[in-house]
Every structure is written in structure tokens, then in C-alpha cells.
Length: 360
Image (cartoon, rainbow, N blue to C red; front, side, top):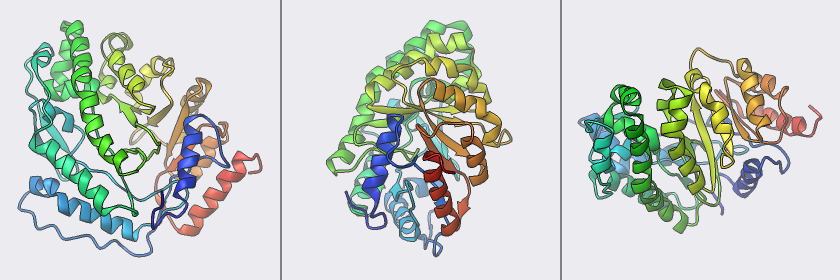
């Protein structure tokens, strides 16, 4: 497919496909932010409250349009729009409500126990889900030939249970009723994951677009960032008995997946995740105050030793180069933080090609 501001989009898609397989076309994928030639002209918000702003479909798509118009898209950075109502959107399908903040939202727990969730039935005909549908449809219509409309942030498995139950209460359930937590994690995926995913992916696929999500990966079929932020609160045994089965279910459902491993507290579960043959790659988030990425070279090496790809989220270009010295090029995706002048970004992309060829 062709995009106005990204004439080499097909090549970017090809590099990502090689990355999913632990291979390289000519160089590893590089996603890097470039200073725009001019600031985006964002539409003014005249909303009476935060909720109105978040739920305004036209305003949110117009903001994406302005950002794309001003953007510079080098290497595997591509113009995109992510429909968004916050990470706990999936709880609304089971009857939950959302409280909005300036930068996110959180669900209001409604389950008295994890076993209470086993009696809840998913329903996509809700205000929130219909808003996500409308955002997706308008994004696809307005962005045709201009950007990729992605899947929204869908926190499922244990995170969905935590959103319905309350994370603190779910932690207590882990000690008091581990079987109930396991049943709830399996249940929410069994009855709602495919229902939610396919409702939106079918729209994107019908528009002739590849699949992407809040992590800017690309694949022609269904792919997603699997995750469970709740696992930083539990032991390896609890994780493997109660939560991991539902995560593996998702990995098997998807054609490609990258796991979002969030924070040092989640590292205790890395080996259990790497043991899953369905896992393609890992997104390691070391978190604020725990950088740079070069402090975690052993983690990246463990991931590569298991035959999985790495999304190398690092502080800056120098940090990316420092980590790369210890890794093999196959399966690395560079995603440095910061924003750079075009010439500096292009120099890094050239360096990545030379590094992959053993000439850096």
C-alpha cells in the first residue's frame, strides 16, 4: 500500500516482517522521532470536561491528522492514528465505567471477587466500545492513503481481571483463592478476547491495512503487544499457575506477538515467558530512574539467547549504540527515545545498516 508521507512504507513493512522472524533484509528496523519541519496545527479543544474531550471522535481524529501532516517519517517510523480511551477500555465491555485524567483513564472496579467475574457477560454495544468503533471507522476513512489506523490499547487477561476487581483486592485473591484468579483470567479471554479483537481488526483488514497497535509494529495479519502489568505484584509460582495460561492463549491466537515486560518487578517472570514457543519478541521497559538501557544488557542477551526478538527502547542514540555492541543484529529493533534533527536521525539509520553488515 502507498502512504503520502511515507513512500517507502512497503519496505518498512518488509523489514518488520523479517524482524518477526529474527532475520534482516538490509538492516534492523529503526523507529526514531524526527523534529518536524513545523509544529502541528492542532485543533483547539473547547470541551467542557475531560470526558468530553476523550470521547470526541472528530476532535481526536483531527488531532491525528494535524500530527501526521507535520510529521517526518524516516526508516520504520510511519504515520499512524491509535484510537484511544485508556488501557482499561476492555473493562467497559463487562459493565465497567471509566474515570478520565488528562493523559489516561482508569476503570471503576465492579467485581466483589474474582469468581464474581465468571458471571459477567461481555457486550460490545456500549458507549465506550461504540466510540472506539467510531474512532476506528473515521480514522480509516480520513486516513486512507495518509496513515495507518491501529488497534487500540487492549489490556486483557490478568490486567482485565484487575481492572474489574481492583489490583489490591486481586493481589489478596492471589493468596486466598488462586484457582478463582486462574478461572477469571481464562474466562475473560475465552468470552471476550476474540470478540473484541476481531470486531476492530476486521474493519482494519477490510480497509486493506496491515495490523499495528500502540507499539508501532507492523504485520499483515493479526498481531498485538501481549502484556500484563499486574504481574509485577506476584510471585513466579502465582504467575505460572494463574496468569500465564491466559497470556499463552493470546499468543496462540495471534499470528505475531511481542510481550510488554514492564519494570524490574516483572523480570522474575522473564524465563517463563521466554520458554513459550509462541512468543516472538519482548519489549523490555526498565522504567523511569532505572536507565539507561545499557544497564540491562544481560536482559537483552537473555532474550536473544532464547531466540526472541528485542524492541530496544533506550534513552537516546548513544544508548542504542552502547547496547548494540553486545547484541547480534538479527532480531533487534531500534527504538531510541528523544527527538532529533533529520540529519542526526539519518546518520543513525546509516550506522544501523553498517552495524548490521559488520562495518560500523
